Length: 197
Image: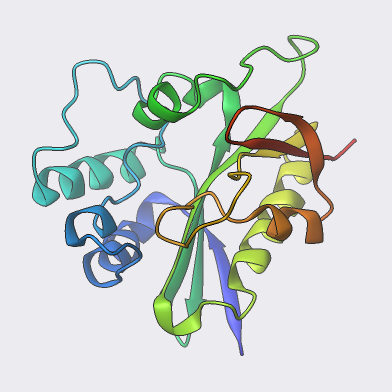
């Protein structure tokens, strides 16, 4: 299978929203059209992402054009078949999902100079799941993070994997296969890291 991984840039905004327009990655129709607006560098205070699909799509377009959503798209035969949201941890601590789901995850690093890239979520088209696309995306995140001067890549899988829809952060085994190890645990999650330096 020939897969091309591209870093999300503003000129790929139509490919990005088109993927979420047409690709189910959750059982609930509303949820699969999340457009990943909940994981961004923007402060979520005062913003309503839950009101409608159209509103989330509009936010997604603004966020991609403004580099608030960062990550990678996987293409197969010119069509987007996968997405990985990966951003600087320190820039995402005020986003909606961090505030909602990540309260038990430490926000301080050993030193203020430590630069952490976080992997927040994956969405893979149903017809290509279990074909290694998430691993290709993750490997690219790690490669580019090293090139961009990050100290490590961090991920937050649940301890018990249920399904792609519920476990959007990916299974722990995915990270283990890419050289991650458990940094520490919360009640429900593993905080896994791959050191780059």
